[in-house]
Every structure is written in C-alpha cells, then in structure tokens.
Image 1 (tube, rainbow, N blue to C red):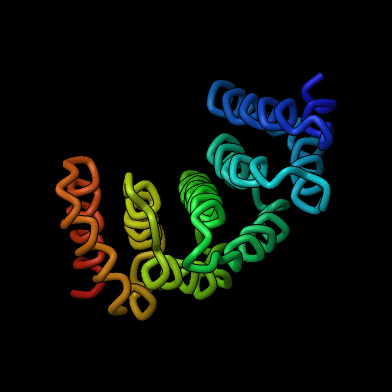
Image 2 (cartoon, rainbow, N blue to C red):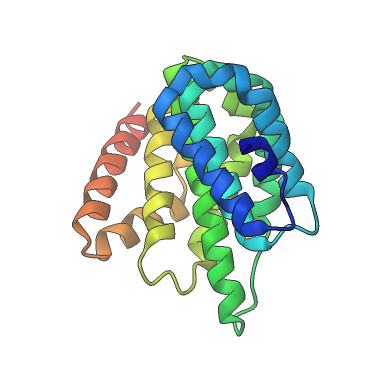
Length: 219
C-alpha cells in the first residue's frame, strides 16, 4: 500500500501522505527501516524525476531523505550520492522578485533541502561516517550562501532557523575539516540574522552554532 502511494504521482495528495508516512515510520522504527530502503529510496527518486509530479510534493520528498538517513545511520551510504545530487539540483531553484507564489514555493523547497541535509549529516554522524560528506561540503555551503543572499518572504523565519541549525550541525560533525568553509562572511551574517529575529528558539540555536563555529576557528 505504501509503495503504491509513493508511486501514485497523478493523485499527488496521496503521494504526499505516503511520503509523510515514510518519515513517521522512519522515526518510529529507526534501524529496522533499513531492509525496506532500497525500494523506498527508488520510489522517492522516481518521484523527483517525474515531470508530471505536482511541485508541492517535492519539498516533503527531499525532507524524507533526512528522516531515512537519521533512521539508518551509516547504512545510508548507498543512497548518499544520488540523494545529494537531487538536493543540489533542487537547490538551484530560484524565484523572480515579483512572483510571491513561486517565492513561497522556493521557501518550502529550501526548508525541505535544509531538513534533508541536517538529517543526513546527523545520521552519518551517528554512524561515524561523516567523512563521506567532505566531497559535498563546498556545494552545501554554496547553497547556504545563496540562502543568505536571496532569502525573501521568510516571514516565520523557518528557512533561517533551519539554515542556522545546519551550520551548527556541519561545524559539530566535521570540525576542523570545514574550517575554511565555515570562516566566511555569509555564515556570520546568517548567525547574526538569527540573533536579530528575537525568537528564543532561533537565538538558542544561534548561540550553540556560534560556540561550535568559534571552537573550530580557534583551532
């Protein structure tokens, strides 16, 4: 039933619910999810590659990569390259300044991408395989730079909050290996923007990320 839902591209509401269920199941059964991941990941990739798929399904599909990675840890390695390629492609999506609907969609897409990166990094950290991420860090940091420079209509600061959290996760997971990438003006700008929101939760995340980044830069 679940696989039929994931592949039901025409009835996109059904597909969206199925994707959400995958995330819920991943969080519930964690490592026991691993035997089903080949088929599930194949269906998620198919969904992203299907030009007929309603665009609203893509953000939760991307986010689902992170849920699966957190569930299975180091066992996510076979899916890493392809899923990161999908994330990098999605990250290129931008919206013109005068199209509020498309700007809202791009924000949803970016939230999904940021959630995916965060889950993948945390999953590989739990599995002691964070070194697998090193070839992709420059591209991930370029996405964060684009977020900082082109963030629009992020009224609830969801994109900013997830971007700041990702900075902290990258720094805490990869340490001195990303010292050069972390020591960039846009990173500090994102952290400053997070502090300026006045949102207690975002400020706490910024303080944690700042402390981790500071430790790396002091090395």
